[in-house]
Image 1: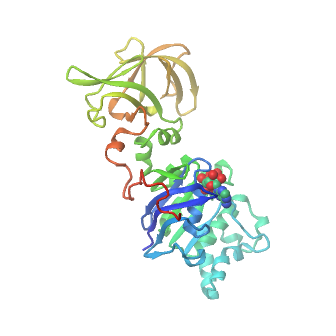
Image 2: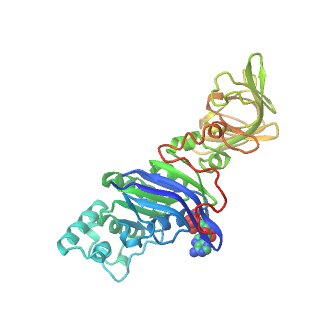
Image 3: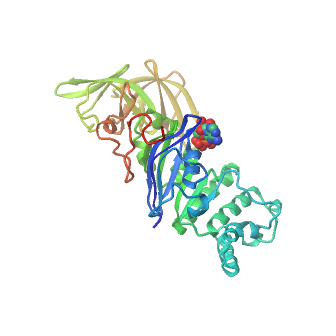
Length: 386
Ligand code: ATP
């Protein structure tokens, strides 16, 4: 059993909160991705879990042990970092064996575990070479093999694929996912690449300025971001946000936009809310129809970008812009007037002022999965030494 529990962890650098009151539970065998923009505290949180940073507040529990005060080597974890340190003067075998030797494992065990890990990563034919005689992708696999050879219950990885070129990265991503699934190690994986996060994680933890914003499975994060930041950070293109006002009309309600109205009978999420809102809309949920069709919204085509599998269309809707995806063979001209149909049931409704999802606001964060709820508010200075 190797659940990881991060409880209200704070890490200060000269008074600045690199990690700010973060609580996160990673289940035994789960693959958790830490995602967020540069400088949001992902690496610091990972290093804190590893014991490479001393935290200023909170507690870290791995399995059933409180490891907060333990040095890294006693936390029973393996790590792979961005600058994967393969030792140039050691053979691949010795590189993979490194952690086991440090642990003073018996020679026969080292031999067996190195070969197993090497086979798993398809580097068994490289064991006698030196790193300089291997490719960048192979070196990355050496670093992963070294971590896996230790049969860790807990694996911490910080951008382990960042040094690979795009194609190799795509391949390594799938391979690593398969491998970690087989091994069943509890994994925390840091990346700023949202595609990597979505494709690999059982769950994704999104961070911003030291805080945990949302923890959920990839689809929930994509369809149900808790706020504008998450909706804008995840997805390519980012989620669209349109301003509207919800009004009562003939027993039902409508969202009044600049250039039209959306009837809302089918929307449950809104739950009686009236007044200004932000509509979070994914590009694939925007349907473009002919101008003379029965559509609730009117728009004009600004740009059409053919992307092969689909076209990305930018529409002007009043003073706002809206991105839509269409089939590659759909013909649209610049400046063409069109109708726009949006399925109200697929809209994410946000409070206009706070830019936080209405449902999430009312009920805490319903998409937080089985992890603990993210603390939204706490006393300043709570959980850290005076
Ligand atoms: P990136 O994706 O760019 O690696 P990150 O999300 O991993 O970013 P961190 O490296 O954890 O971010 O940094 C979080 C904040 O803490 C940043 O503002 C950074 O400048 C600061 N920071 C990190 N390490 C130190 C340090 N040793 N001393 C002072 N400040 C630091």
